[in-house]
Length: 181
Image 1: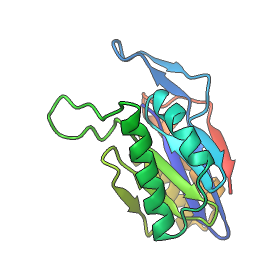
Image 2: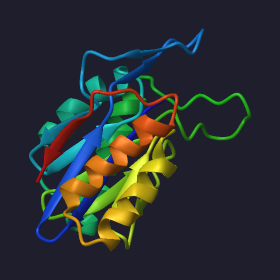
Image 3: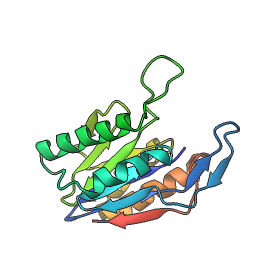
């Protein structure tokens, strides 16, 4: 019930996150008090997970160096898995398969690497240099694609993605927060 969008090209990058919060029993959408994106030493992180996940991961992110190398990213993923499982967290699913919406992270490194991390700790890096997660993701991807094709900045593309998701998905709610690298 959110949108996190990130883009990086032309020497810059940006991440946008909405403030949607939903009641698990009624699916009533409200506005969250806290942003879903944050700055850490290695770059930016956006969360689609419940508020407990960022609280568990803050020490991991605060103490981590770089994610711009394969080893740096593997080390970060390993530390994330260890911290979450050590805290008793696991992705829940009603279908018997991993719950891909239980943990959703988007990482934008200081050097412009966009990485998506799923609930199974699998990572995806995109050739397009932009990505979006959450229920407004498809709207955001379309807007970011159009912004990049028209030679817009990465920050303008990420913001366009967030705005498209809020405008067209009933589960994305403003205001939008934006951070740049």
